[in-house]
Amino acid sequence: MKRSPPRTLLLLLLALLAAAALALVVGPQGWPSEPILLLRLARVELAIIVGAGLACTGTVLQALSGNPLADPFVIGASSGAAVGVVIARWCGIELTSRWLPLFTVVGAYAAIVLVLRIARAGGRTPVQTLLLAGVTVSTLGTAIVLLYYNFETGTGDAGRTMLFLMGNLSESKPELIGLAGGAVALGIVAALLSARALDAFAAGEATARHLGVDVERCKVGFCLLAAALVGVVVAVAGMIGFVGLIVPHAARALVGHSHRRLIAAAALGGATFLLLADLAARTVAIPRELSVGAITALCGGPFFLLLLRRRVRERDALSRELDPRDEAPR
Image 1: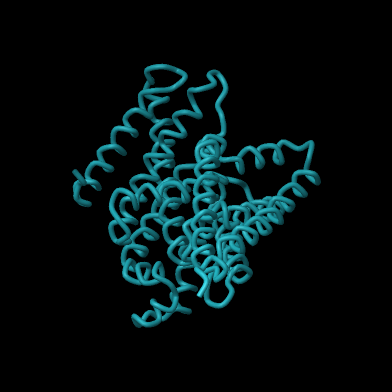
Image 2 (image 1 turned 90 degrees about the horizontal axis):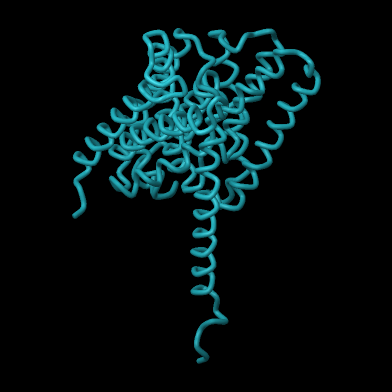
């Protein structure tokens, strides 16, 4: 029996609370003392903020591009934000500085706009073109990050920056966590208020235009929204991939395609997923701590390949149906 969307959202909220409680009491030090509990609480807060922000961003980007393979990591937004981190470090700005989000937001916005401009053709965003554009922009961003590391190698700052960019939930100060929480909350509210426009975009730009949506203005607005969320997330947690790809698909399976419900479900699911991924990163290799970005990549990589394979099969099936050589002779 299929559950109603409100009941599903309630179950997702309960799952988030259970995951948060588990993350607070489980760890390499066993049952936590008060100082350790406070540290874990800050980490739990950051995981909820980052997971919800990434999942919401992936939902917005998939609707904006009309492509279910879009997410901040795949289309290069995270790499653009990482370049923002590197530029900030070159300028002498600390990883815990309140100015860092400004650089990451600008970098993420530039990457999103560049990828969408490269990939869009004839009012559409083909899967292959989007992926190629995303890979190209991500590679360029990675090259800039590696250049920074090569020029600064031998310094503690370079190594610390690289470890941070791999995905880290333990670097941020309380004021940055509060800033990120406020920005992500505002971003989720903005996405919820734009749910009707996102529904129209998901049906295609032509449909959105026919329904009276100001397509060009909304595209700029959604790009700014996605860039703000990605930039803030990278500024406090580094590059954490595939949360924005996996979670929106799972949320659609649970609550359907209406973005008013989908965004709420994705935010709850993203927070829960990242909490569990961070818990695994802290506990599976005791006494070492793994990068949470590595855990999400291990989960998201196979999912991405399966999703891409399914899209290719659907395209091939459609091509065979439309191929006149397959028609019966007259």
